[in-house]
Length: 515
Image (cartoon, rainbow, N blue to C red):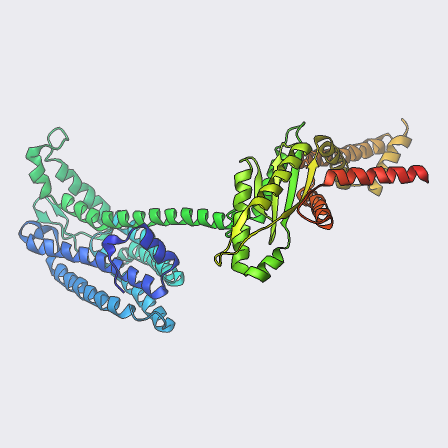
C-alpha cells in the first residue's frame, strides 16, 4: 500500500479512521514509530559528529550501545512495515504483530526516557499522547496494557534507587569543569538545580545577550533541555494535529449523520421523525391567539405508476412532487415525507381558510406538473389532501383538560394513617389528649406539606408540557380521516377535517333533537 505521510491531510486521515482496514492502520502506526526512531537516530548522529563539544555531557560508553540499538530497531520497523502490508485478511497474524509493535515501542520509549534523564516533558507526551494515538489505530486492549505497564515502570524507576540499584543514564552532570560521578536518580533534581544556577551565572544582570549566547550554547543544561524539546515537541505537535483533525472528522461525521437522520434521501425533504419533532416544537411555540394547520397529502394511483413505468419512474415522481411542494410553500412551512407516497405539511400560525387555499393551490400545481420519463412517456399525477386546523380555542380547551387529568392522576389519595390523623385532630379536646393531639397534628402537617410539594412539582411539569405527548399524532389522525374522505369522493381534491367534524356534530345535535 502506497502511503505518503507528507500528504496525510484531513480526507486521508478520515479514511484511515473510518474506511481503512486494520492492517492499514497498524501500518500507519508503524510508520509513525519509524519516524520517531529516525529522529532519535539523527540525534545520535549529531552527538557523534560534535562529540568534541558535547562529549563531556554524554556518557559515550553508554551512547554507542544505545545508537546501535536505535539502528537495529529502526531496521526492524522498516521490515515490519513491509510485513504488515499483505496481512489484510490474516487477522491472527495481524493481532500478533500489533502486540509485538506495541510491546517493542513501549520498551523502546521507556529505555529512551530512562537513559536520556527522566524528563517529565518527554515522559508525559510519550505516556499519554502515544497511548491515545495508538488507540486510534490499533486494538485498544494492547495499548491499554502497554499504558498500564508504563505506569508500573514509573513506580519501579522511582523506588529502585532507594534499594541501592543504579539505573544507567546517558547524561553526565557537569558541575564547573568536571563530571559528577556521584549522580543518581535520588539526587537528580538537586544536581540539576545546581547546574542550572551555574549556567545562569554567565548572564549579566540575569539577561541573555549576544556575547553570552555562544557560552550558553555550550552549557550542559542548555544541551539537555534542547534534547528534551527535540524529543518531545515535534511529537506533541504531531499528536495534537492528529487529534484536532480527528475532532473535525467527528464534527463533520456528526453533521452528516444528523443530515441523513433528518432528511429523506430520495426527496431531500425532512424525514418523518424530524418532521414530527419540528411539528411538536412549533406547537409548543404557538402564541395564545394563533391557529395551527396540518395538511396530509397522498398521491393518487401511485401503485399503478410503479407497475406501469417502473420503480425508477416512481422515485422520479416522488422527487418532482417534493420539489413542487418546496417551491410552492414558504420557509415557515414544515414539509416532510410522512410515508411512501404521503407528505406531511405543517403550517404554524395559519387559519383554516388560508390552509385550505394553500392545499388547493398545491393540488393544482401537482396536477398541472408534467412528468417526463426516460422512455419519452409524459403523464400527470394527482393528489388527494386532508386539512385540519387546530384553533387557539380548541388548543386552550385541550390544555385545560390535559392539565386537570394529569394533576388528578398525579395526586395520591389520603392513606389510612393520614385519615386517622385528621380524625384525631377533629376529635381532640383540651384535656387529657393534649399531648397526643400535638404529635398527631405534627405528623399531619408534615404529610400535608409533602403532598403540597408534590402537587406543586407536578403542576410545574404539566405547565411546561402544555399539551399531550401524542398531540401531533392526534392532529395527523384527524387530517388522515379527511384525506381518506377525499379518496372516497373520487380523488384529486381537498377535504376539510374541520368541516367534517362540524357536520358530524350538527348531525348528532339534530338526531338528539328528534329523539
